[in-house]
Amino acid sequence: MASSLLSIASHSLSSLSLQNNDKAKVGGNSLRFNKEGPNTFSNAKSSGRISMVAAVNVSRFEGIPMAPPDPILGVSEAFRADTSDAKLNLGVGAYRTEELQPYVLKVVNKAENLMLERGENKEYLAIEGLAAFNKATAELLLGADNPAIKEQRVATVQGLSGTGSLRLGAALIERYFPGAKVLISAPTWGNHKNIFNDAKVPWSEYRYYDPKTVGLDFEGMIEDIKAAPEGTFVLLHGCAHNPTGIDPTLEQWEKIADVIQEKNHIPFFDVAYQGFASGSLDEDAASVRLFVSRGLEVLVAQSYSKNLGLYAERIGAINVISSSPESAVRVKSQLKRIARPMYSNPPVHGARIVADIVGNPALFDEWKVEMEMMAGRIKNVRQQLYDSISSKDKSGKDWSFILKQIGMFSYTGLNKNQSDNMTNKWHVYMTKDGRISLAGLSLAKCEYLADAIIDSFHNVS
Image 1 (tube, rainbow, N blue to C red):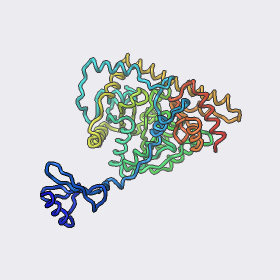
Image 2: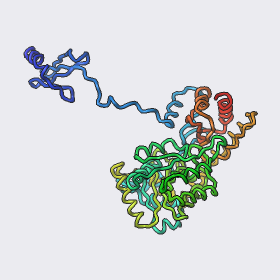
Image 3: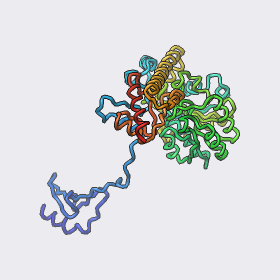
């Protein structure tokens, strides 16, 4: 019978139509191409059946190209592969102790213990997130006594940290402000452009960084915001600008607000470092509160990755401050509508941590102390790095820009070739735009880093 089936198969092959799974059946028996070629066959007995196998290895995904490595996260991958004892990872913005170890805040551990004691369940949250978190995060951002909160003009929806919250805001722009453009600082955080590209929101850049001074190009910034079409969304870093660490002064923020108000633009703040930049929650929120106090309608994305060390919890929020409570209700309904097919509802663990800490006066005070400690360590490292470079470099170059910058990053002014030298020769891993994360540096490593920067700056063009 086997020879009879093989005969039938060979006579019928030309009329077989292969299905998507590369199978054809003859009298209840499966024929498959084998890997040796389309005209060669193998047979195998299995439960009295004979299979004929042919090679068809072309994937439906053949046309999908390899994506380039992420410019920030790829730094850590390269760092882990390096076997040098001298290596330093100054690429990813995550806080480290003086021993260069990850740090879980003590107040976070206490909040988690409280959750265990209460026996919290893991039920789904509402689409907009945990109500206690949304209340706490809006009050932390604007101040509990802010008129916008009292008048119920703030629409807050819990998002997937800063990235997810920005993405919700971008989707809102795309859907309800057709043709609107977003103005983004040059340079900016590496993911901003990806977020607006994926949301199909067009963007252009405004001048921000001045390579001649390694400082703020304030005049260029103002000119570009003035030149933008009326109603443009202007993406602003609330504090500790990433990647430069260069922030406008309060007087400059006033002038920026003047221009945005005159041009009827809409400010969109990215607040990723509240309390982590200066050590003060209020000081780091001053820019946002200034715009809101002027009666401007404002979008604000928040993240708790840095200031509470909740990197993996993906906890943040999108806030839309509107001119009326009625419009705030409508905006919130649409943010929920956007979130539902995107991720349905947000995770609960980080939201409970934030709500418990902000809502408990004792824990809140402990958090502020720990924030000041973290911000203080970075300030000390910044000062030590400046001192080390200044004492070693006899060229007369002014390195004081290091001290004028704020937050966890320093924009060194090194170009791509110089940054490559930092990695290839000195095993210092950083982004190719010259940004280094001071949060990943210890006081003990400042002299080594100073040597690497001086060598790269002076000896590599």
